[in-house]
Image (cartoon, rainbow, N blue to C red; front, side, top):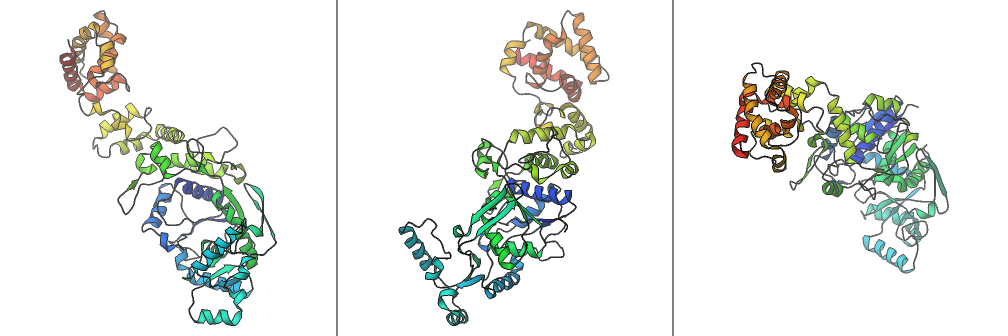
Length: 497
């Protein structure tokens, strides 16, 4: 049987970066094994549905280059939105009722609450609707066939519950966590079909995975407690359950607890792939808008919880596919280290084709020559492409102030003597290029008994206002002779000649 996996998010808001990692691992596993990667939208809980969230999910994964073989856009098992599959679930729920594996329950919210309070008062460890308490409630087991049919015909509100066996050991082997063993007495008779006819997550999930031929369910560990129930459902239908792999959590940067949106706010980093704006106008930052490259995000996420078993850290998507294996996923949670994400982004900028990078920098600049010079100057120094411009504001506007600490140390008598000489030396440079500027200064200053190295920080201060930065000679070339001369003269006026 060929491998078929699915990523099945709920459209209740922006896609958390942990969900992106789940999608990535599903994608890598499918492609490594020559299988199919499917997108299914689990929108049965209409009360939590958020308009635009489905398209956001699709756009986010498209930005990262994760393409689907089947999705709401099309495929042989359509529809791929659970809200459009309501009749399918009703049919399967009826099958369970007909075979005695499920039953109708007519209990009101008040009756359910009273039952729980009674159990809590009796200090029952697991106060729930189960194989024991069901016999005291209003359902098709206690009411009988005729009364049940009468109530249904009368339109009485009801749900369909799974009949969980009283004494049964549920065992399955998780691909990451090995054997999981749970006793059925710890599982309540879960609602499968709600009063409005919509399925719960549990029924819809199992039916869809079966109908779509899903062979491996790779999902977050938060779903591990639901897995025994899902095994029971597969057994109730007489179906073979897929292989399960429950992924470790993405942890807070300090390693304590699950990564949340609040952690991003406190740590000043995004936790969503793409920017999201809710109905109130609140904007949640995205990795894309913050300046991360998609390949850097994929590389970073792949290594959060999985390791290749080698020292290799930099992977293309194709290399990730070839190297990926479920058995190298860790059981423990992975600490979210935004500095590592930045390191990956910096690496991918350094290795980016210059022409591509120049084209990016030239957006909004409309000066390809300047963009090319900026790339040459800053490519090795930045974490984000936008910094190629933002980190050197003095190349676009003359400094209005000077670093006081540097001025106090470096704007000395030697600097004051050297600056007018440098003006004269630069005036004689016809081709104002990095090489010619350097040659003029390094040959001319020694003739005046000035060592160039002693006054270079002062020259940087005069032309940029700062005490450090990228290659000074290249910056002077970018600024041009006239601008450099004007800035040195202004520094002599402001700082003293």
